[in-house]
Length: 304
Image 1 (cartoon, rainbow, N blue to C red):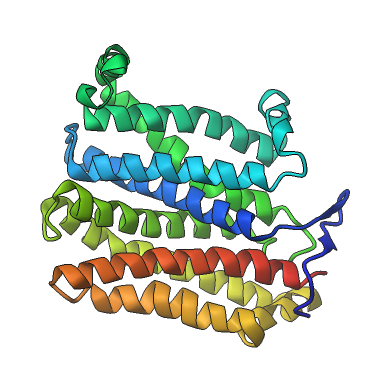
Image 2: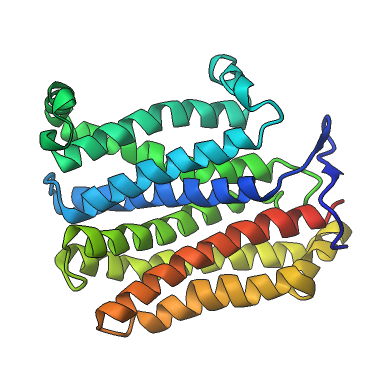
């Protein structure tokens, strides 16, 4: 079954999703997760100051979504015609809704990054920064909703591919949100400590550490539900269940997704040193990339 990735979605025409799409799914998840988790921490604490975590998360969110857009456009058959999707909308299409969310999310994330770093980072835009600074709380809520939407919409998009049982599940958006929050939080706290002087045992880091366990539990639960749906489903779904047990993708799942993405961060979380902190964060990020690759490529390997 592990054949080439030349296949059809059974709707209109043949498609091929190579590595740039997996990278985009990874970067979009990191972006939305990092932004959402930082805003949730600030809103939970009622803190609207420019903390190291907010600086880190806004920087990570903007840079990763920008790089993700580069990957997405580069994978188009005609990259220079990408602008057409920006002006032609179909509100019944998940892709169009995702584009609308991205059009709002990217500039607002940029503005939030400028606000986090202060007017000195870009004096030419100090007036714009001051204007948005006066509506910081509603801006936080708007960007939070958009960030969670960015995490989820890629899951909705590929879950609509009915010929691929591993992808065609209602649980996938939830899994993408949970894994995005987990890896986004890891990236945000890593850069907050390494680049912005936050202490790895600081207050915000402690909040993220406490949130890490329920997020990982939700992620594991979603993976379990997908696996059970394959094992207990129809003939095509049972064939797709082989992705978890045999071949290259099973190795990636057990070693990369569960080993690196779950076991290693869990073990590292019991350490108190800065090295354990960084190891756990890097493992979470790598595990999320493994999960995206597994879902995309194993999902395309097993076709109804």
